[in-house]
Length: 127
Image (cartoon, rainbow, N blue to C red; front, side):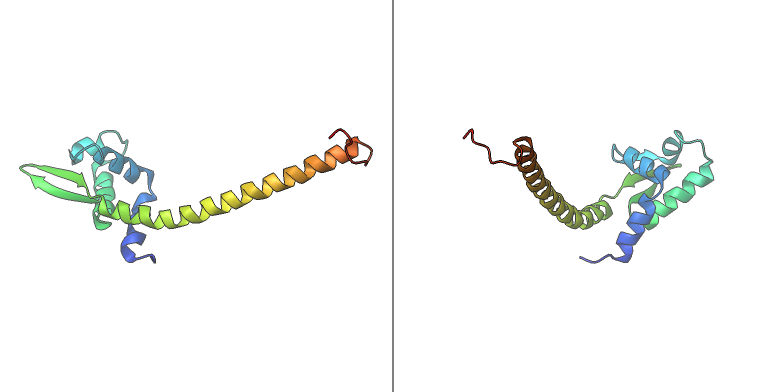
């Protein structure tokens, strides 16, 4: 699975904390633009620009409902991003597992070396 223009747009949209907060709110359900703007100390035109980026990345849909513009989350691009990240997650988990095993071997060797040094370099006769 290679990066696609839609995946690039998703990650570009997610790069901004305001847009991530808007998506988190929309994960709870659709909302009018005014409600989405309320928690932020930025202008309505600035919120509108954020919404355009999210809409361009297909992360949200905006619909006119009478006099209100409502937004809703479109989860498909997030799933595509999660799948892409999942490939690398498996890679890193494998790397961490290998590192854990390596550190265990080092610790075992260090423990054996410490034991020999505490016995004056002689093998342990207690066994």
